[in-house]
Image (tube, rainbow, N blue to C red; front, side):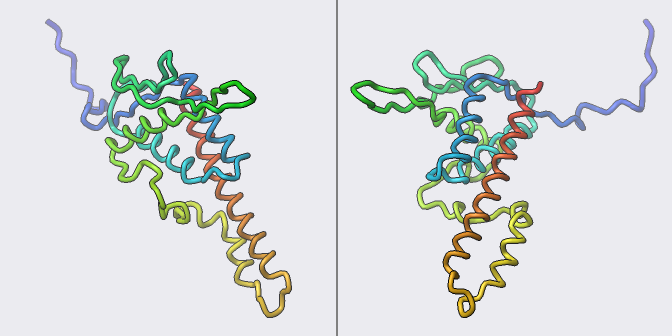
Length: 200
């Protein structure tokens, strides 16, 4: 029997930080594309939904567990969560149905998959992974968002209703610029996560 010398340069397994691996699936790709498209083109879509999707996925990817997570859907369009190739949860539908000119149109919204992502994020330590009714976070800023709108805030301090006849118009313009920049940040965060997951 030959005994190998101990290599002091090897790190022990206790120091290894594990990460869950989210598999790139067509369903998850559609969730990204739909959310990003809504942030870009749908004025009724709130950026909080995109922020929470990015936050939840980041929490899952850095949960300290070594597991393979797959977000897919079954033949009926219901969200299907698999962990380590085993079905862990069948969720709500990823589709909504709309009646148009005497026909029913299926529209992908990814709600079932987003709910499963929120469920996993909650188990990874995220306190509020879902958008809630009358959620105050719709109007709150994160610390990393504040520097993005510094220029608009400085302009806001210069606006004087006594001197400016277009005071309300200028306020509306500044508000729209702020919203655009904040949306772009969420889109950028989602694009980075999408690249991280799909470039493996």
